[in-house]
Amino acid sequence: MTEMIILRSLREIARIQAAGKIAADTLTLLKRHARPGISTAELDRLAEEYIVSQGAIPACKGYQGFPSSVCISPNEGVVHGIPSERKILREGDIVSFDLVVEKDGFMGDTAITVPVGEVDAESRQLLAVTEGALQAGIAAARAGAHVGDIGHAVSAYVAPYRYGIVRDFVGHGIGTEMHAEPQVPNYGKPGKGERLEVGMVLCIEPMINAGTAKVKMLRDGWTVVTADKKRSAHFEHTIAITADGPMILTERSE
Ligand code: MF3
Ligand code: CO
Ligand code: CO
Image (tube, rainbow, N blue to C red; front, side):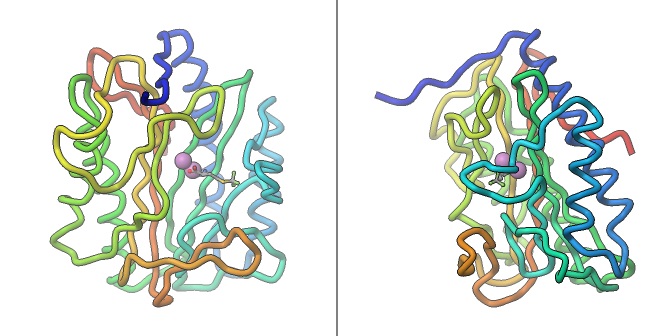
């Protein structure tokens, strides 16, 4: 028996979107402050203050023991980087921010990777391709299609660049829990996997590496980095499947 996938009403989707808007605005704030010289701990504090000021909860903090409000992963960091006073952003870095906001019991999950000052052309391309892969995945998330269509769209978009598509972490359903059914991998076969239906709310989140797809976890038990130390990018949106197609619930207004 396959696990149950919850279908949400328009009312519930609106509540996920309310959480998602705060999450999106927090990313906009983080992007603005991601300048050379700032520590990732300071960025985490700014984000947490903003989320709390909106009457919301930074849902990552304390989730399975994660110590901070935002996952901050510079350069070869793939996901789940722990903010630190000792990690200072430098000109030419890239940095991923991933966060979940809970508002009135509902959650929005979103991530971006941004340049710190001027970055090299290879890094700019990695960011653009990963964001494009997210958009391709979203476009495939239509009622009647399947979870495998999303992963296939992501991997087909990335294929010409010979990047590594991370397989060890995947997207997921979301709602009143951060991680719900189904899993949404960034690879797959068209027409395979769970059938997508109106009311499903999913997080699509390609993690794309400049080199190998292989990753390793550091001894802190959280930080995931590329096995070859090349750079990695991560973009994520929470989306709802509606009768009119995919609706992004974590859209940034910048
Ligand atoms: N935001 C992550 C995701 O996309 C999960 C963060 S793990 C946590 O699924 F421990 F930081 F919460
Ligand atoms: Co996330
Ligand atoms: Co997610």
